[in-house]
Image (cartoon, rainbow, N blue to C red; front, side, top):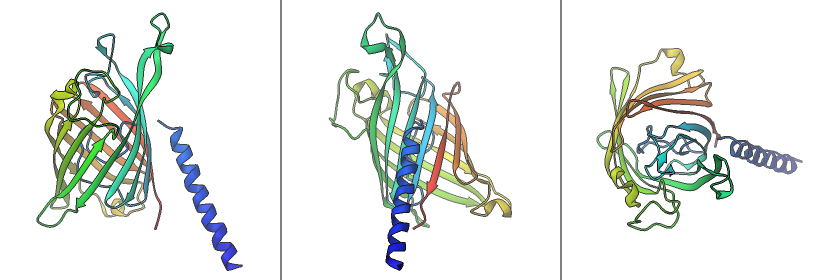
Length: 266
């Protein structure tokens, strides 16, 4: 009887996970992994954390090659992500493409297609007292070439990166310093190659809000340099599951989204 009960519980847990994934697949986000606004960092989510999110992406946020008839456009994105273990995150992301229906110029324009890609991020070195955390990652892990000329192909977001993150406690306030180096494979995105980074600030919270079950957790202010300009934003986790982020890209382009987080207890 105990064995049957265990099997039923195991099957129920697996079914719950499958239902959660199905729900998130119907949702709509930019990336699906942890980071700043547009810049990656070396932080990782708690092991066993699923994320499903949807975002509005201002044209200042997207790569320059994401154009229609020579002009960039605002768009939307969605993603699902998983921190499988403490040292690895994987995600699936999609960005809606503004194009003519059925690819025919005599058809109306709309969001009739999407760019889909997978991302991976690993954390070989955890943050210590005297050293930063280090992460290595790749966005759009399709066919990678060191250099891709032109704007053709679905390699809008493809890049390799290495990131370092160090946090400092200043009288109960948390200051994070993040530095990354990114290499975009497409020459169309060559202006995004190089050093990026930013700082994060988490204010000191009262005793009740430090409780892991508090309705408001880790409100974070962010300032970053994405290799082209300065972005500012903020995010917060509400009711332990709803992650909200909003930002101004290069000081004028609003980008923001919602994400549902769920951590499976091991």
